[in-house]
Length: 546
Image 1 (tube, helix red, strand yellow):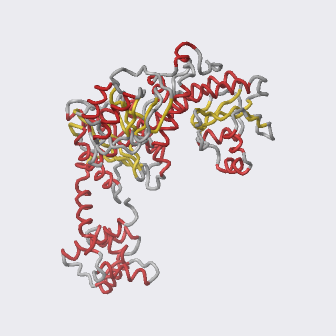
Image 2 (cartoon, one colour; image 1 turned 30 degrees about the vertical axis):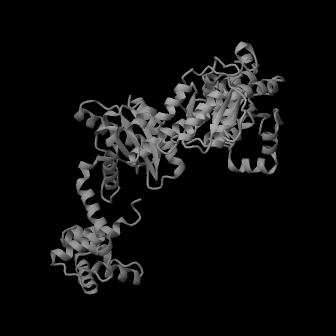
Image 3 (cartoon, rainbow, N blue to C red; image 1 turned 90 degrees about the vertical axis):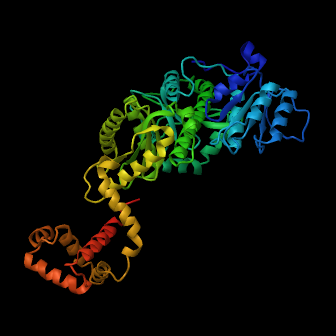
């Protein structure tokens, strides 16, 4: 592991970092390449926000065209001026259309200027920090032992060198990676790893003690001596180009940390900066994929963009699954749900994109079998096995609505619509299935649509059911509504209704007599019974649907 490498070593470093090296260090997600007519081998000397009123820019700058519309004629002029000033590259915002304009591309190719676009998920402030960090880290030799962005591999490598247990965290004290160790870990490390973040009480205590001010303000390793059951610890901030990227923690495991641990950790922080920057860019890319999928499912996105970012073919059978792990699913649990979806679908040789939504997730499944019938069977099998996985992880209330299999990504909004309808039907009282296509629960879907239409007039205050609701409320939670519901559900058959309610048949007959007296309901009228059934269904819906 190259823990002693520093910027400025070797011929390439002496010549200065190239645009290609800087972009490689940053990773995908923050920038999208439009064109580079002369390649990416130009040396980068600095990062500069472009000011059209300022002349005499130094050569080798990555110019950021903040606030300039790439569709405008002024943008074309800026591209030509950038070439004249010897700029290494020119970066525009994503623009309104999200597509590079032909005139801009043509001007860049004629002038020989590399042009890139900032992605929608990466703001200018974040991009400037990433570029500066990338520029500094371009001079740090690559570590052949650890793949860029492999934080778990990095944690294991550092743990071996310092003979301790390593945790890598972001600036919000969230755990990004941790080393595996055979030694017993202390309770604080165990809680941190299980919760994927440092416990809130611990963060609050460190903040109150001024620990984070010292950590982020120091460029050196901080030593925390053993205290009680907490072993000796070392921590160092990971930074590059003035940007704080996270921290590395080392806890003694099974003994004292070796004398060289601080020097090793100091060197590790320099190498770790590349990996943390790469990891952050990867997360940005994941958000871009999610955004492209969400926009397409909402009927406002581009199938081509989703194909470009995921590799799912634009033409080919695909479908949407609408997943609800449980009625009380919290926002933070949807992240874990999406991870489960992605891993399980990937293990079944499918290409998924999981998008978190309120109380659940939508899963785009692409590259299904080219035969439509076999693709439908494939989705059905996936849904049945997947709902068992979700139920095991989140509880028995898990439900999955299966969307219609469609032939192109552009048709996914229709698949999403049918998946949502199927899920809503599966959540209905009395429905015991856990997974279904819309065609399999068509009657419940039709009833839901009818009740949606009738919501206004069905709640009119003078209807018989409304009178029964008011009567029950006035008499401390009476049984009139419950009796009517059971009576209608059992088609007016007194013995079956009495057994369902747990009362004697004669008592039931008395209740029915009192019920019709209070409500004015004519149980002999088919229309009256139908309206009462619909109103009772509307009452049943309360609180069960999101």
